[in-house]
Image (cartoon, rainbow, N blue to C red; front, side, top):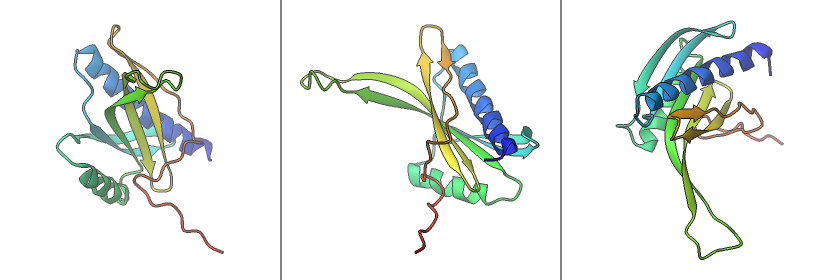
Length: 148
């Protein structure tokens, strides 16, 4: 991965995390949003934020695929709150422990990954997750075809 590409992913991730932090600081749960960004040398040159809470999953996928195909858009950051359930193998009869996280998908024309961010409800802030490119995803862009 080129250093500029990594800087671009980090810039959009920070912007998405800042937005979620601002909503938490105001006492609101972060809404599902999409941040579309045009980048220049690892910095956001232009961006737009769209609410995604009125779209179903298939519509979000179509939106991302159509938007990332636009030559003016370099990277999309998608944020949503998910409730994770953690089961204890030692006590299978117990109810799972749950916690909310802000999941941020980062999608470029060639790559996508995700970052999970815990929510500190008491402090009303995000516990920021780290960018890890080993966590690939094929939620929005198709996996490359295998050739023999």
